[in-house]
Image (cartoon, rainbow, N blue to C red):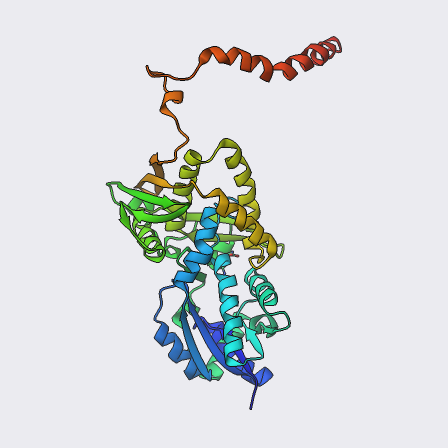
Length: 405
Ligand code: ARG
């Protein structure tokens, strides 16, 4: 009896070829594991294909809820945006997939896990480091990193073994999708001077083809988690799907990112992430109202760290747990509603309210009802400006003497 390997199977060309290759090269029986993280697809067709190509078993797991509740919403609460641009859709899905690979390997008594990543990207790092963290010693095989075939050779290999080559293999683009966003690479996009052709966008309308009337949407948050749309309660998965549809229709969420990969390469990535764009914007707008200035300043630093850590494949680390504990604590008063206007490619916050708002009308107003004690300001300024005056008196004078000012 051969040993078994659990392969993260997408149904695409590389992972289909990998089923045959793992048998040929390592004499391993392949259990194909397809994970549904909201990349809408005909999963029973994917399953049939795995079996047809030679997998001994083909499993499909719906991981949408786990993805949203244990990964996406934690990143949202953290305001995680890699290099200020990328909402981390792919990066967040990989540790979850690694966890399911490890769980399945244990259930099925497999001695190894496998994934279809090449040796040039971030995803190999995320899979390998996550599997190492969860199951030190479990063997990891990355066929596409090992076999050294070009795209054309892979297609030839597929044809030789009667593996159906999906039409998407004819497309010049490399695509990854889940609920939190879609990424598009390769083809003409590898020229950073070339404007992305309209055909790469499938989630968002071109802003000039967007409706001529704006849509307003009210997103309700409870402790930093979005729970209602226009006053109606909605579960995470449906809420995100609903916003992807609505904001996408208005052309919101297109991102063109010249990105720094962990492996040292700069790459040009196009993303479509309408729900992520709107939710991150709304969440920050509510934090501006419910967190103190000092909390906001510190949280922005944590957001950068958190985003880097997710991007760099370090989800299953103790540092991530520590940051998560801080973020969770920071969200205890991030409750309220944000109103946004979606129109011709832009999303604008036009209103916000919270039962625990720190915005005080009485302090802010210039109208009657002003409660701010202006007579206290000169004293405050006297002390605030003390070190400035001290330094100016001593050093500006000597600078002037030397003609430096
Ligand atoms: N650059 C993005 C990231 O590293 C997207 C990667 C997409 N992955 C893929 N296999 N197509 O997260």
